[in-house]
Length: 443
Image (cartoon, rainbow, N blue to C red; front, side):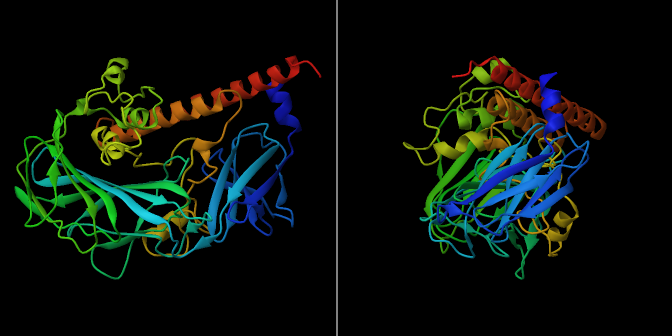
């Protein structure tokens, strides 16, 4: 009951915003309290004062889950505010259209045919690194540009900010054919983009990848029943590991390089390569198995198996090692992300898809990743492990939906159940934290 009594008296949330580019308080930033009870609704708003401080009023009777959103230099930064939260701290960065220190770590493609063999299904992941000093956010009307193959029909897309949870981020068409941008802030650290698309297929197809900046690693993964043929001068080499699929890698790629390759034949990736939850467990070393894989799968450390903790998770010994656990595990990010605790995108996201004024991570948009977003912040006692486990469950759920393993009805039922479980767990965590504080001796 202590948890509920603490919620009742929390009628405001105070906080401080620090500009990590200057290491000074961030004055004049817009701060909004977002209610998550039914989608995303603004509950109150204010601005930071000269010392970066703010106070957000909580409407009477509104004791649910909230997010605190801070907008600085047109980029959004988030902190979770579970019931009973009284104060938060948010870190922001100055933004620029082009930032020195932003580079492309990897472009990884997962290719297979559908069951009919008449279409290719591709999941492509981009890993972008921001090592700017002093730290800056790269943000503009086209912070990350990329090309898709001609005829690609986009089926889903997501973005993952450093320390955040995946959120929907729709690609915006640019002037040139097949040229797109993710309008999503590239914050200091590693940002990941994922896009799933379909291509018409007549038994063989030529790909001509184009990179916009020097890229450490390009990788292509496909079923062993299909054939990969690099184009003249294309620098692909096979990854000679015993896996349930075949992988080809090009390293140290420049924008002017020829990267053509041909695929032919048919086949689907075997499902024992693990789900996104397994990939997440392997990549971050948590060793937790999500809903997408059993405990036995989690213990299977064969590449392409259950993806236990990799020997070289940061790629210190092999540049490909850091990324292969994501691609071997299936989908690195959730595709229909509304995700986590009902972090649903609003109408602004639809505007972004058509080049409108709102966009993920910017004013009017609801892109939720960030240096202070859900995956990074403790929530009560054991909050980090709780949110990590829930993230893996949501990854697995969205992956199963994307791969057709769940009907729409099953997906909605299971998603609703996960949201209920998370709410109850947060309440228990807050109650445990209150009880612990009461029990502590005064010194």
